[in-house]
Amino acid sequence: MGKLVVTDHPLIQHKLTILREVETSSMQFRQLLTEITMLMGYEITRDFPLVDREIETPMGPMIGKAISGKKVAIVPLLRAGLGMVDGLLSLMPGARVGHIGLYRDPETLKPVEYYCKLPKDIADRQIIIVDPMLATGGSLISAVDFVKEKGANTISCLCLLAAPEGIKAFQEEHPDIDLYVACIDEKLNDHAYIVPGLGDAGDRLFGTK
Ligand code: PRP
Ligand code: URA
Image 1 (cartoon, protein in one colour):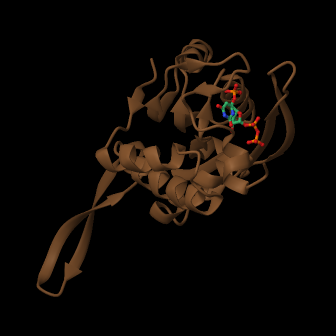
Image 2 (cartoon, protein in one colour):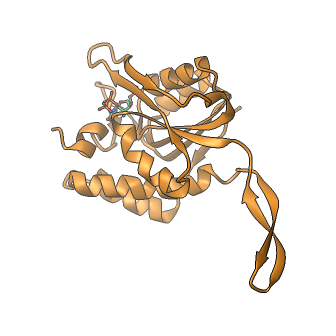
């Protein structure tokens, strides 16, 4: 079974409270989302394997540690996932970035795919799919289906807020995938929005409402 990790560090909780507030501007929202993602990045990279590396300090030789293993590809779900890319890139500047375009049809609430561009060597990379909102779970489930179809075999997902319903649906479909969230909220409302949530993440990030 994949892990469910709630990254509830005090700094994350504090920044998340400001980010949720209705008065928070798009400019602040973008900045806070980047900062929170960077902090969550510590947790998602915690199990990265290390190897010994012989180096020379000004005082003499030593065996240091260096990250080994698969290189990373960050895959945001458009649009709102774009707000989580810079935070991870600041920790892993050499990572590749793929994009998956999905929107949730307001009538059916089902995800509709409109764009996909992934690194060619996706099978050899550690894939981190990012999307701030895990509501019904439909979008994230489709995104993982999609990268698996393209050959990815090491995948984890990073979301800001999750509804219990979405976590359940996701774990039923993809029990092998680790899921990192900053907070599990109470429920979904009748329009499948997370409550208390933060509203529409894409609109708040890009100022489109
Ligand atoms: C939001 C969000 C997720 C999806 C979550 O995107 O960023 O991708 O909804 O809902 P689900 O778990 O019920 O699938 P949205 O469809 O609003 O598109 P946008 O990011 O382009 O605004
Ligand atoms: N998408 C959002 O942006 N917010 C929600 O609460 C649910 C889906």
